[in-house]
Length: 173
Image 1 (cartoon, rainbow, N blue to C red):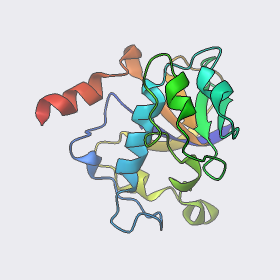
Image 2 (cartoon, one colour):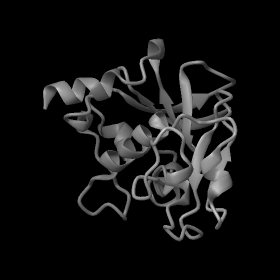
Image 3 (spheres, one colour):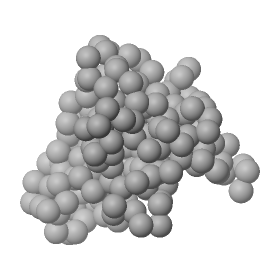
């Protein structure tokens, strides 16, 4: 059973970021959790087409549809070193949910605090999350409430409510 970073959308306070801090060196302004949540939004908005026309349209083979261990939908990943920014993926998307500037760079967002894990610790966001909406624990098998958005990062969607936390944030603004 592999341990994963789990973001519980039913619990998280997107307005206050749940007080979670991030120690990732590429986020000097400590916006790591914000960036991670932005990428989670994209992963949830993507319709995960079975035929994946955006992947087929990319001349650089910069997009890949990865299988998910938790459901059959899979997740879209961009290989940032291959992407030329041509925009053919955005043109090919039948739902208009993909924009060249919104496709995440999965390799540069979160390293799950690898130095902390090496010392039997937990990621900083887990330790500082006030509402316990971010966990690091073992996840096994397929779970209908889990969507794997990136390797090692899973979103928990209790009751099938993908949009409730994002709608709640919009109403509070």
